[in-house]
Length: 77
Image (cartoon, rainbow, N blue to C red; front, side, top):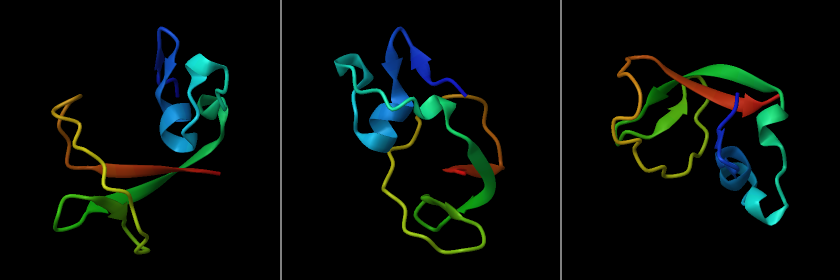
């Protein structure tokens, strides 16, 4: 799972608030992740399908990628 383009790692900055361009990349792209089935709540936030857990308010992706009815969450293993 690589979220980098031209030295701009999105995972390290989003998950750990550490900027890879400043030499503090956490290599989050190389961690092991589990895939969990998810769903949207009434406001549109993605939540765990089976256990209610708090989530951050994430801006919508504004049409990036193909539309789908399936929602999945990834978490560090």
